[in-house]
Length: 457
Image (cartoon, rainbow, N blue to C red):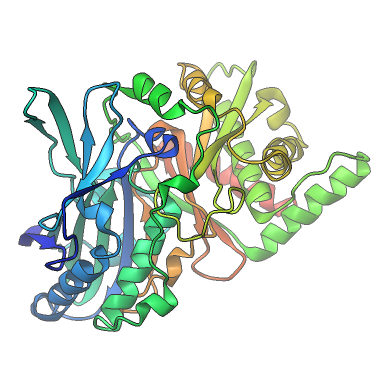
């Protein structure tokens, strides 16, 4: 890796007339202590480094500056005053985002494959958030300030480009981040055409739209999260793999689950969607992997799957609401049931029940229990997986003028039991999952994953 440029991209002068703040809701504060979000986008780029530095880098920086004018919290700082004061985002006209350009001689084709790639191979393509700093106000009260976003673009001469973004989950959820990325990409490929607002409406920052169901959840979450260190330790003994479930296989899964439920005379109303059946299938495969890989498997107890549900529609918020508007949903099943012949049915029922409950009962129900539920599944010996991202994001639509991404990766998976999910880059209706597995686990998982899909034929 060779550093070509290490700079700051500032907001256009006059974007923020006065220093201002943006409050955080309890939905934002919930994500304190979680690892930074890391997303990689790989693009074909059959040009030399000189062309990259003369055209691509200046254009990216110019369009980034313009888009930050609308998504200015990403350029701001997260301010953490001591409790009971609530944290907030502070921004001013002089704010900036760290922007790094690098050159790599690694095989680009290797990085965009589905086979195993080392954690370190992705991490060198991602920037670190700038170190936090401490300031003191006039009353001698100390407060911590943290940057919220950093960007790195890496050229593989005559082969490709990797665009890596690291950001703090507290500032935005996946949907808000993808809104930012699509807006930036449009501005870049249209060379700053301001008509992008017709294609991508500006973000909505109205915090009054989020009602705290308890009236004090923000304060409760701050007390619980205060002093929590952000863990960004990724398992270095794991490799990154991509597993694809084709559209035809998704339909077979849906039909199989629906048929089995009819045979059981299942009267419960369940949502049998692509998300439900594919997540159910991966949940079962990962439980079978644990059973195969453990010398003395303990199939007693429960297994858990955690996924985030977008609440904008349920709370009647605009789809462009910027911030966090997702709630964690926790599904649980007996390990012994998940590894049986009808394990996918058990898993689909558990996940589908959570989806239906959100639709029928509404969002933010029992929000005061989210933290305790999360702590419970993090206890040593508890088996769980969490789903990062969503196939509804449309990540393969993000075109900066170099064409669609050849591959996109959620680089922070593997921490806290997470796996990633996206729409298939090959066909509409398919799904791809990103997993962190050791080389030893791969053979066993491959066998379980492919054999299970073949049995649906």
